[in-house]
Image (cartoon, rainbow, N blue to C red; front, side, top):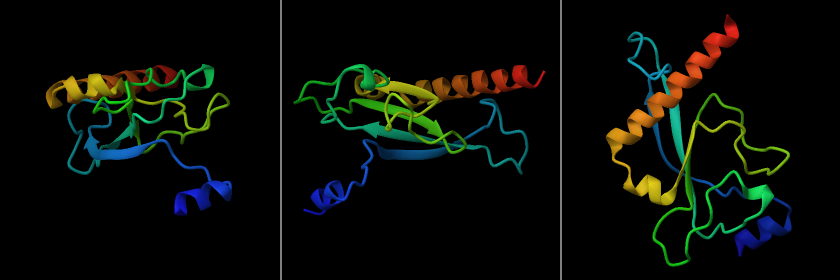
Length: 133
Protein backbone atom coordinates (compact mmCIF):
# COMPACT_ATOMS: atom_id res chain seq x y z
CA UNK A 1 0.00 0.00 0.00
CA UNK A 2 2.81 2.40 0.79
CA UNK A 3 4.31 1.87 -2.69
CA UNK A 4 0.99 2.75 -4.24
CA UNK A 5 0.83 6.00 -2.26
CA UNK A 6 4.37 6.88 -3.41
CA UNK A 7 3.40 6.31 -7.02
CA UNK A 8 0.19 8.29 -6.66
CA UNK A 9 2.19 11.16 -5.17
CA UNK A 10 4.40 11.24 -8.27
CA UNK A 11 7.49 9.96 -6.48
CA UNK A 12 9.92 8.25 -8.86
CA UNK A 13 11.06 4.87 -7.62
CA UNK A 14 14.41 3.47 -8.63
CA UNK A 15 14.70 0.32 -10.72
CA UNK A 16 18.02 -0.44 -8.97
CA UNK A 17 18.87 -2.18 -5.72
CA UNK A 18 22.35 -2.06 -4.26
CA UNK A 19 24.06 -5.44 -4.11
CA UNK A 20 27.35 -4.31 -2.63
CA UNK A 21 29.92 -1.52 -2.35
CA UNK A 22 33.71 -2.04 -2.41
CA UNK A 23 36.72 0.27 -2.55
CA UNK A 24 39.04 -0.17 -5.52
CA UNK A 25 42.28 1.56 -6.46
CA UNK A 26 41.27 4.78 -8.22
CA UNK A 27 43.37 4.03 -11.32
CA UNK A 28 42.59 0.29 -11.35
CA UNK A 29 46.09 -0.76 -10.31
CA UNK A 30 47.59 -0.73 -6.82
CA UNK A 31 46.65 1.80 -4.18
CA UNK A 32 49.03 4.75 -4.63
CA UNK A 33 49.62 5.23 -0.93
CA UNK A 34 48.12 4.46 2.45
CA UNK A 35 46.34 7.83 2.44
CA UNK A 36 44.55 7.18 -0.86
CA UNK A 37 41.05 5.98 0.00
CA UNK A 38 40.55 4.68 -3.52
CA UNK A 39 37.17 4.87 -5.20
CA UNK A 40 33.90 3.30 -4.14
CA UNK A 41 32.45 0.91 -6.74
CA UNK A 42 28.76 0.16 -6.29
CA UNK A 43 27.01 -2.85 -7.83
CA UNK A 44 23.41 -1.94 -8.68
CA UNK A 45 21.08 -4.77 -9.72
CA UNK A 46 18.03 -4.44 -11.94
CA UNK A 47 15.43 -7.04 -10.90
CA UNK A 48 13.99 -9.43 -13.47
CA UNK A 49 10.50 -7.97 -13.16
CA UNK A 50 11.75 -4.80 -14.88
CA UNK A 51 10.76 -6.05 -18.32
CA UNK A 52 10.38 -2.79 -20.21
CA UNK A 53 11.77 -2.77 -23.76
CA UNK A 54 12.13 -0.29 -26.59
CA UNK A 55 14.41 2.63 -27.37
CA UNK A 56 14.13 4.12 -23.88
CA UNK A 57 15.38 0.87 -22.35
CA UNK A 58 18.30 0.05 -24.67
CA UNK A 59 20.77 0.83 -21.88
CA UNK A 60 19.80 -2.50 -20.26
CA UNK A 61 20.32 -6.05 -21.47
CA UNK A 62 17.12 -7.72 -22.72
CA UNK A 63 14.58 -8.89 -20.14
CA UNK A 64 15.03 -12.36 -18.68
CA UNK A 65 12.45 -15.10 -18.75
CA UNK A 66 9.97 -14.78 -15.93
CA UNK A 67 11.00 -17.88 -14.00
CA UNK A 68 14.75 -17.19 -14.18
CA UNK A 69 16.42 -16.75 -10.81
CA UNK A 70 18.74 -13.98 -11.90
CA UNK A 71 18.88 -10.21 -12.28
CA UNK A 72 18.06 -8.52 -15.54
CA UNK A 73 21.28 -6.55 -15.24
CA UNK A 74 23.99 -5.56 -12.81
CA UNK A 75 25.35 -2.06 -13.36
CA UNK A 76 28.62 -0.97 -11.76
CA UNK A 77 29.07 2.71 -10.96
CA UNK A 78 31.45 4.77 -8.86
CA UNK A 79 30.58 7.26 -6.18
CA UNK A 80 32.10 10.12 -8.20
CA UNK A 81 29.97 9.58 -11.32
CA UNK A 82 27.09 11.64 -12.53
CA UNK A 83 23.81 10.42 -11.11
CA UNK A 84 21.20 8.64 -13.14
CA UNK A 85 18.99 10.35 -15.61
CA UNK A 86 19.34 10.99 -19.33
CA UNK A 87 17.03 12.34 -21.99
CA UNK A 88 16.41 8.75 -23.07
CA UNK A 89 15.49 7.42 -19.63
CA UNK A 90 15.49 8.93 -16.15
CA UNK A 91 16.73 5.62 -14.72
CA UNK A 92 19.83 5.41 -16.95
CA UNK A 93 23.30 6.07 -15.55
CA UNK A 94 25.12 8.58 -17.75
CA UNK A 95 28.43 6.69 -17.77
CA UNK A 96 28.29 3.35 -15.97
CA UNK A 97 31.65 1.76 -15.39
CA UNK A 98 30.39 -1.65 -16.52
CA UNK A 99 27.05 -3.30 -17.29
CA UNK A 100 26.54 -7.06 -17.22
CA UNK A 101 23.47 -9.17 -17.80
CA UNK A 102 22.32 -11.12 -14.77
CA UNK A 103 23.55 -14.34 -16.39
CA UNK A 104 27.00 -12.83 -17.00
CA UNK A 105 27.18 -11.64 -13.39
CA UNK A 106 26.12 -15.04 -12.06
CA UNK A 107 28.74 -16.85 -14.18
CA UNK A 108 31.58 -14.47 -13.33
CA UNK A 109 34.08 -15.39 -10.62
CA UNK A 110 35.12 -12.66 -8.21
CA UNK A 111 38.64 -12.68 -9.67
CA UNK A 112 37.29 -12.12 -13.19
CA UNK A 113 34.85 -9.45 -12.00
CA UNK A 114 37.62 -7.70 -10.05
CA UNK A 115 39.85 -7.68 -13.13
CA UNK A 116 37.03 -6.39 -15.37
CA UNK A 117 36.29 -3.53 -12.96
CA UNK A 118 40.00 -2.67 -12.62
CA UNK A 119 40.37 -2.68 -16.42
CA UNK A 120 37.45 -0.24 -16.74
CA UNK A 121 39.01 1.98 -14.05
CA UNK A 122 42.35 1.92 -15.93
CA UNK A 123 40.55 2.86 -19.17
CA UNK A 124 38.73 5.69 -17.43
CA UNK A 125 41.97 6.91 -15.87
CA UNK A 126 43.78 6.90 -19.24
CA UNK A 127 40.94 8.84 -20.87
CA UNK A 128 41.16 11.48 -18.10
CA UNK A 129 44.96 11.63 -18.58
CA UNK A 130 44.48 12.13 -22.34
CA UNK A 131 41.94 14.90 -21.72
CA UNK A 132 44.38 16.70 -19.41
CA UNK A 133 47.25 16.51 -21.96
